[in-house]
Every structure is written in structure tokens, then in C-alpha cells.
Length: 83
Image (tube, rainbow, N blue to C red; front, side):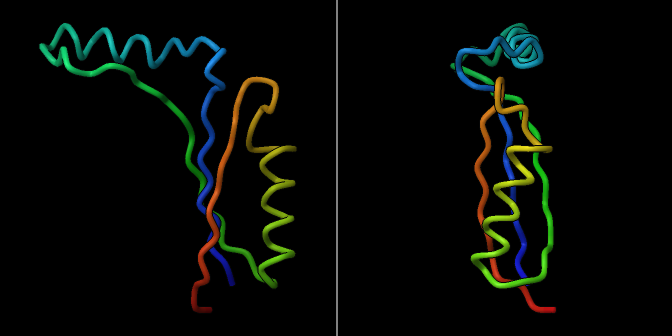
């Protein structure tokens, strides 16, 4: 069994209004040393199968469902877990 930890974020060229609001609020609160903010999504999936098959499945799930590949990028890690 493998646990996939998936991170999805906007591409650098896409405006992220939530991140902009968070950064402006931090500045108003006196946190002036924050250079940038990135907002994203995080998923954890536990899958059965061998590493190669799980890796292929997770990549497909990310590109077809979990991320809008026109606007977002994704990355993931796999870690082996006990059943």
C-alpha cells in the first residue's frame, strides 16, 4: 500500500485572489516581512498496488481530476505504508 501526498497550486502566471487578500491582511497586521503567499489544495490517498502502478494512477488522477492543468500545477510524493 502507498500513501500519495498531493499538492496542487496555481501556476505562477495565474492570479490568485485568495493569496493576494491573505498577503494584504498580513501586511495590515504588521507582518511586513512576508514576500509572497501561495494558496493551494492538499490531498492524501491510500492506494493498493505496486509502486509503478500506483505512481501511474496518481499522475492520471491529478491530471484528469484533482488539478485543472490549464491553471494549476501539481506534485506528489508516494510513501509505503503498512496495511
